[in-house]
Amino acid sequence: MSDLLARLRGRGWRVTAQRRVVAEVLDGDHVHLTADEVHARAVERLPEISRATVYNTLGELVALGEVAEVSTDGRAKRYDPNAHHPHQHLVCSGCGAIRDVHPIGDPLADLPAGERFGFTVSEVEVTYRGLCPSCR
Image (cartoon, rainbow, N blue to C red; front, side, top):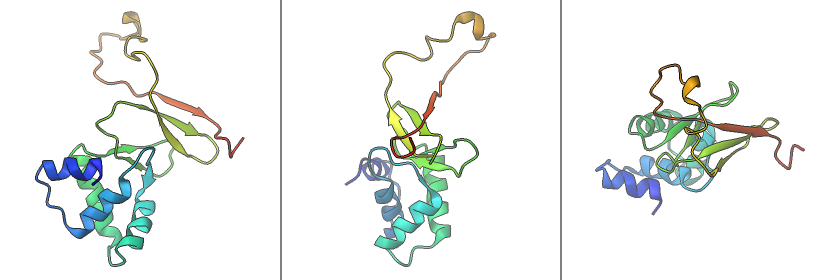
């Protein structure tokens, strides 16, 4: 059973065959699929699943805070099931591949007090960009 599916069951989320397949497709490290990619993989497992069901399920998972939407450079939104594991992203400027990375240190501490302009900072998003081995 996937970590995501286990969390959803623990929350009392009604697990239908369609929802289970979407959660299973999202399972794994470095999974950052678009809605269309989730649908294509879900159809391989459950041919009758509709695109609307996939989109609705992804929207529900985001609203629950179990999946994060990741947007990079105006490309299609991607869905990250590691919403409960602090991490940053490494994005290929060529093909758009995304990898989870876990830098050492506290990025919040890197922002000097004088650069906070009175904000109470609650969250930091860092995106590293470069070229993956295939695009180099």
